[in-house]
Length: 133
Image (tube, rainbow, N blue to C red; front, side, top):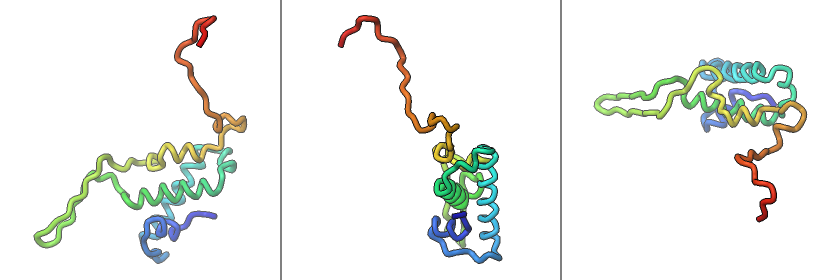
């Protein structure tokens, strides 16, 4: 399944945008851009990515970007005498930074030897010979 702007609307809990609207076109462009960034990172290994995982990451990344499309740390909406201000801890970054590190990890098909699927342990110090517990 390929991600569509309708999938993004569902993820956001919004009505489906009409295909002639800028919102629909913007979401479609973000979907295409996200796929391009993922394909650029993985190159020939792109075809090894699980399609359902790819769809999940694209949906989450685009929905995240749609929730917060610019890098403003705050914005204010004023109507008559009232106003509402929203502040954010850190801004949305440009480029592929709107794809979280854990999503990149989900996408990584590994290098074919299973290393991506195995955990490992690092021992900070050796135990002396003859050490008994």
